[in-house]
Amino acid sequence: MWLAELPELGLGAGQAIVRLPPIHNAVLTPRVAAVVDHPAFQRLRQVRQLGPTNLVYPGATHTRFEHSIGVFHTAGQYLQHLSQVPAFADRVTAADALAVLAAALLHDIGHYPMAHSLEALHLKGNETPRHEDVAALIIRGELEQWRGPRPIAAILADDWGIDPERVIRLVVQKPAAHERDVDALLGSIVSSGLDADKMDYLERDSLHLGVPYGRSYDRGRLLDSLTVRGDGRSIAITAKGKTPAEVFLFGRYTMFSEAYWHHTVRSVSAMVEAALGDLQSRGILGTSDERLEELLARSDDEMLEWLWTLSPDGSMASSLLSGITHHRRRLHKRVFTLSRIFDDAVYTDAHDTVMALDAGGIRDLTGRLRAEMASHFGLELQDGDVVLDTPPRDKDTLEDIEVVFPALAQDRRVALTQVSGLVQGIATDFLRVVKKTRVFVTPPFAPVLRSRQRETEALILRVISG
Image (cartoon, rainbow, N blue to C red; front, side):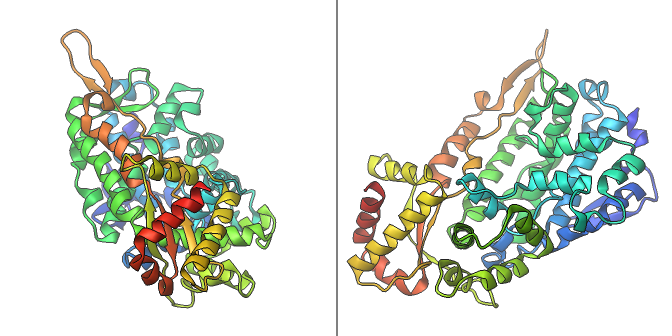
């Protein structure tokens, strides 16, 4: 049995460990330590897991370093539980298991400060690096400053005895894109509706943010329920995992609603995105290669300060970044919200119109909103005083999970959404209730616009529809 060949799973005595909050002991074997001690992995100590969210939740200072080791540890737990499932154990080898452990450890190696904000710009039409693609460059040793004494690929080949390109594919590709069934199955441990990445970040983020939502599901029972989907290309759950899976998915929904996309968190993210968009539209950030080199070399705070030094006086970027740099916290205030929560065509159409805009369209609409507000309310609004927030486009679908119900003759397998009205509701409400478009303004002007709320809403709707 391949479990005995994997000391990383902590089944033996006397191994070195890394202690992680809340109370997890990740095994640090020599080959794991060779990756963790690599300069490119150590760099993750300076990249906060949730970017500028610490300006709203003071405890959100945990890092991609901590999370990456946590996902590695959680992936090991997945393997331990799945090893008891013949459909998994009979088709997976020790090399397969090592490959997915390495992918879990390295899945965020390409993350840089504010990556999600920059990638949001990418989804809106700008060319910015995807952290998965950066991971491939770092693992192969193609970025000289992060090659270290040995490229990570050499460590994987020589110390782990696995193909580094296979690990890269597990990090970069979605499970469905893998040709081999076993790679799709392994990939689903790292990226799926119920993966080790989500299991770690929900718990870890909840702990550091000081909220309960991501820790309310039965982790042990959910792990005990892991099995293999009927086609052999993804993990699934047995019937006993239905309720903990529902709570898990609801916890993720609630974390987006109450934490990740809390209106003040979105204010900070929108300020950063707008500043980056302004600098990028001016061609200030240099070529893609130059930009990537700068991004990888800095911590979150260093990056914000660097962007501020690049911002021309009087520019939108300068105005926005001055509110979140130099130990200042001057966040934009919400004055209007659009969503699909109410069956009002005027509001839903306006929301959909904004969500369909690319980066240039968002800048144009923001400029028109600022000009109309200034004229109508007699306000001296400058560039950066009005920010339009559109949440990321890549969170719109809920990846389904197969549930296996034992029957007398043959297991019955159905999608979780077919047997759970709760999960159906989560998928619907995420788009209708959680996903919102917001208009923020600098603090001095918010009271005026809020005191004349009906006029403010009518003006914003008119500008968007016009």
